[in-house]
Each structure stands twice: as structure tokens, then as C-alpha cells.
Image (cartoon, rainbow, N blue to C red):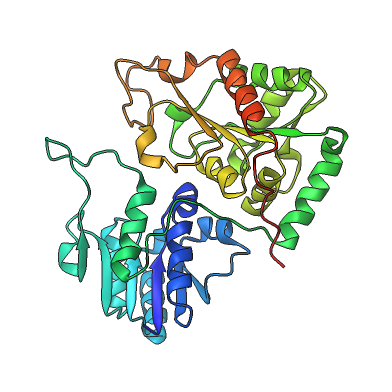
Length: 356
């Protein structure tokens, strides 16, 4: 195959979970031209990676407008022999077909079966519903259908010199260089309010780590800046700082996570940055099934409070009590983080170097 188009997932965390599959395609087809079709918002998560010959942005908001046809024309000009669809959307399959991709590989969902040349089917439970299974396995199945060996589960990310320079500036301005190690807290989550851990819990956890001698960096995206600032203020300790003072970007977040001794996070995109850089991570799950996003990483602890109403997979708690998150207490999270640091001391591989 001379040209292969990979339609990448629509969420940052999912893009990271697709990296073993992408890497396998690049390794299996070293002479093929590899195209990445990706939403502009998530494309920065792959900055610095050496796998793609061209990245083609596709804005979801332009799904049936000029953007759709422009992307289709771009694909036609590239003469893609095959397309692998990581998203399960009808739109991605339609774009692959209008883009002239001769072979289209994807899961037969949402009525798009007739648009696929190679159809895969999700694992289902006894009632016929999709069974919670790790999406990283589904992504691997897609590229194995293309012809790669089993890609494995080792996710991988890169940073650019610009990312690292931005992190250098943040470290200097925030005074994190005064501490031997830094712990990161990630309170964000684009999925919805049901994934959020209380601000007061984050502040107490930050104070606990600070009192143990760590610098504590509260990560944030542009829409989470106020929350990160509030956590740092409520912690009431000079070692707890918010990244919100910096010009924010996904690249900066990657470079900051790469420097951490530990990341404590909700089940959101930056959670996946940590294992991709060999950084231990404690993830707090509430309404979501752990099985959907399991990545089989050694240096990881998953925490979830069993409640009779969950995991509900809802964006907002339908019962209003949010017990699956509020009952997960800071002391338990701090203990998990301490145990992981002790367990991984001296065993975690050095983070991958920045891309040249």
C-alpha cells in the first residue's frame, strides 16, 4: 500500500491509546505514505511524533459543510489505498468513501456497515449490548486487520523543543525547581461534571503532598484555569501552584507531565499522558467503567468507590448526590499515591527525550 490514512479518535485520551496501533502501522509499512486525519483540537497531542508524513485537520463542526468536501478532496489527491477508522462515527466512514479510499476498515456501528470494506464487531454481553472492553484493544484489532502484528499496549508521546521551553519557563516562574520532585494534580474533564472530584478534596490532597516536601502543580486547560487557581489558593501552602498563570497548551501540559514524579488525575485526557512518558499515575474513576480505558500500565493505580447506582456512564449525576466521587476521600488517594511512589522508586524508566 502506497498511502494509508488513519482517522484518529476524537478525544485526547483516545488518541494516546491509539499510539501503539499507529506505531505498528508505521513500523509494518515503512515505505508507505502515512496520513493522519484528526480534529484540530487533539492534533497537538501528537506534536513531535515521527510517524506521519502528513496530518490533515478535519473539524467536526464542518462535518457536512465546506470543510468536509475540502478534506475529501485532499484525500482524493493523496490517493489513499486504505483508511483505518478509529472513531465509530458515520461521518468518518462517509469521508473515507468520498475521499476515494479504496479499503475502509472500521467497526460496524451506527448504520455505517455498507460504507466499510472490512467490518469489525464490538464484543457484546448476553443482552446484546456492547460489553465494556479496553478501547486500546479495539484500536489494535483495527490495524491488525490492516496487516500489522499485535501492537501491544505501550503508549507513547513526544514533546517538541517549544513545549520543553514553555515548561522550563513555567517551572522557573512557579518556583518548582526548588523541590526535588513534583506531583501533578489534574482536576479537569471534558466529559462532564460527573467526573469531577470536589475542589476541597483536591486542595486537601495538594496540601498533604506539599507537607511531605513535594512541589505540587495543579494542571489545567483554558476552561479549567479558575478551578486550578482555586485549588492552589485553598491548599494554602507555598509549594502548591497553578499552571493557570502560563499560556496554556496541550504541548505545555505534556512537557509538564513528563517532569512529574507522580500524576493524580480524574479520568480525563491528560491521565493518559503519564504512562506515555513513564510517569506513575493514580486515576480516580467515578461514573465510568474502568474497563473502557484500561491500558495495562504497570505504574498505575485505579481508584473507584463501589456504589449501587454506578458506573452509570452519565455526564451529570442523574441522582444529584455524586457519591461515586465525593466519597473517594483525599486520605485514600494520598495513600495510593504514596504506595505507588514507593513501589516504583528506582524502577520507572526515564521519560522519553524530547523530539529533535
